[in-house]
View (cartoon, rainbow, N blue to C red):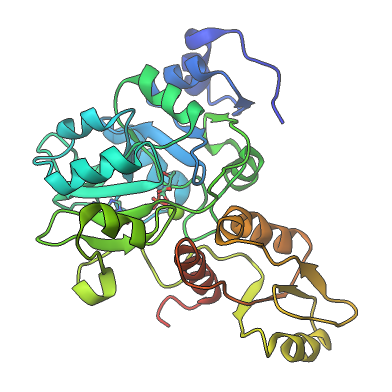
Amino acid sequence: MHSPPVFWGGVFWSSCIRMGAKNRIVDDIDAAVEVLRAGGLVAFPTETVYGLGADARNPAAVARVFRVKGRPLNHPVIVHLAAASQMDGWARAVPETARLLAERFWPGPLTLVLARHESVGLYVTGGQETVAVRVPAHPVALELLRKFGGGVAAPSANRFGKVSPTTAAHVQADLGDAADLILDGGPCAVGIESTIVDLSGARPVLLRPGGVCREDLEKVLGQPVEPASASGVRAPGTLVSHYAPRAEVVLCGPGEIGRRVKAALRSRRVAAWGGEVDAPGVVRFPQPESAAAWARDLYATLREADRLGIDILFVTLPGEKGLGLAVADRLRKAAARDPSS
Ligand code: TXA
Ligand code: MG
């Protein structure tokens, strides 16, 4: 849903930031550019999830993103760019592997980790010598980035460890007035975060499965992409417990979901996602017909479970091929409540 367009222009928005005025959901990209230039925070749509953006060259603005999210300072943020040609301003060296992947998958749900250019602040990289960059495939994000001209540092626009937002309304519900402005670009088409590939070492490493599947990366690179667990590479911010709704998420096989739902129904409000369940009183979420549909519906379904006051959500995992790998990754993290587990 779009609120009426805003006509007042940049001066208005700059003064809004100073006055601490309430944020708004708008479709005015020029106003968003002004907010970024003034050091403010803009929530914006991408094809994966909504991001909470700040000028990546402005330490105070990026610090505010961390504060708003409640995110530890050693968790680096992705720098969003309008075009692959801008990579050289952010990376000390752009390897051929990065050029190949950028050419094939950008704009798109792929983030590349490269050796950071000396001009890139450690406040963006979480103190590391690498920087993550991505060109998102969403017309609103691309126009914002083109008009802004610089890099926009943006984590997902949710509080730390919670479910990522895939609509402007989700952002508003999570962050309230903490973003100066929310750009509404409709629901995110992919629905799950970008794939992160580390290209700063000798071999490519998959730090996070996401919107581009590993099989496709390997086809383009002509070499294997190792999972982070096998490589020993540190993947900051990829905690075990993440993406968690209030409801307890329990993973189970298709053969056991019916029995487990019935047992839980005695004392709790129960929902089931996928599998065969025939029990009165259980809330059913339909099984998505493809991995892409799983990804698109994932976070909205977790939020819907919370809205309905579900205590426990039983889920059968999708097959872990293609996009299914990223969906299963997020569901495992949603189910792991204890970060040490
Ligand atoms: O799809 C996405 O990637 C979304 C949209 C908004 O672009 N963004 C997103 O950001 O998911 P965030 O901050 O929620 O997750 C970014 C992940 C974190 O796990 C972070 O640790 C990792 O990227 N990351 C960022 N820079 C890195 C670096 N230099 N080395 C390793 N991991 C990095
Ligand atoms: Mg996130």
